[in-house]
Structure formats: C-alpha cells, structure tokens
Image 1 (cartoon, rainbow, N blue to C red):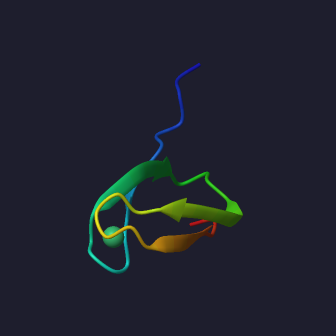
Image 2: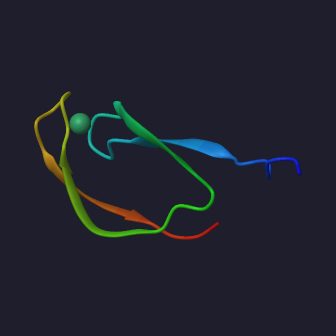
Length: 50
Ligand SMILES: [Zn+2]
C-alpha cells in the first residue's frame, strides 16, 4: 500500500512570520502554546482539519 499524500504546511508566527514547525493536513491541534524564538511572544496554536 502506498502512503497517502500528506500535505506539509509550515506554521508561521503570526507576529513576526518566523517558521516554527511543520504540520500535515491530518493535524488537529487545540490548546497548545508555543513560544516564538524570533519575537519571544507566546502563541496559541490552533490547527483545524483541512
Ligand atoms: Zn514571532
């Protein structure tokens, strides 16, 4: 069986645009916080199913 073609997307900081991590189109994230290494701001990460 072949792997389904995952679509990889960069999650960029909404404040400074720094790329923080990659997720794919199966990701579902809620209630996760990450501190941006670029501007040091805390970002609430929300990824909905595409
Ligand atoms: Zn930032």
